[in-house]
Length: 255
Ligand code: G3H
Image 1 (cartoon, rainbow, N blue to C red):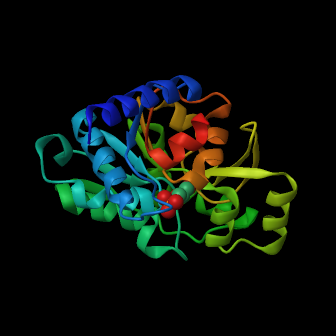
Image 2: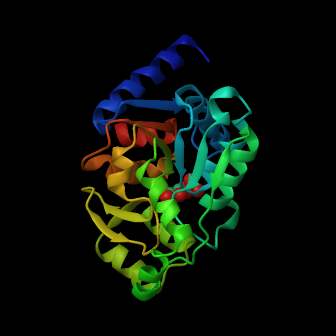
């Protein structure tokens, strides 16, 4: 990389953090939509950032997705990571087993000798099932950890893609389309004004709890995610967020 390219990126990082209203943006070169191996760069940056900010006994809530999954290879048994507890940010039992939160926290913990807590639950609980589940001691323990979360690591998805990946019903997909959902994070779907228009009915970390945690690491890249990223940060962006993204998404937002 030339000096020009690097200084160009750091200019974009600064500009993007101002536009989104967040603490910091890290941009890796490339576009995951064109070259999926760029995801490894996202994972590397996110892991390095986590390694630098991790505090003793911190509780780290982790969502799912392939971008977060890419962090696993870059977590190692260093001192700052060894006392962490990785907790699945939402319960699931599911259709994306290899990149779901439960799988990732287990993997992350074993990579760096930390602890992990999982929550295996069906997605889209009925009201009755939901009310019964939150009385379970095992579930209460997890809900308690969400209250104490110091660090949140999450992906951001395009709304339609996530609804399809989650095998949501035709009526949900239609509702998302009608209400112009563009972005998704933590099972919340947002329109381009950042308004929540739908939320998956499962047990998971609440947006308020995310906003209360000291550190938030968002990992999302690819030009097709530009709109989703912008939507997610549109309204009351959590200022303590560090976004790890790529040039594809960054250019899409800046242009
Ligand atoms: O909530 C968003 C998704 O977890 C993003 O998944 O990183 O595989 O695009 P992805």
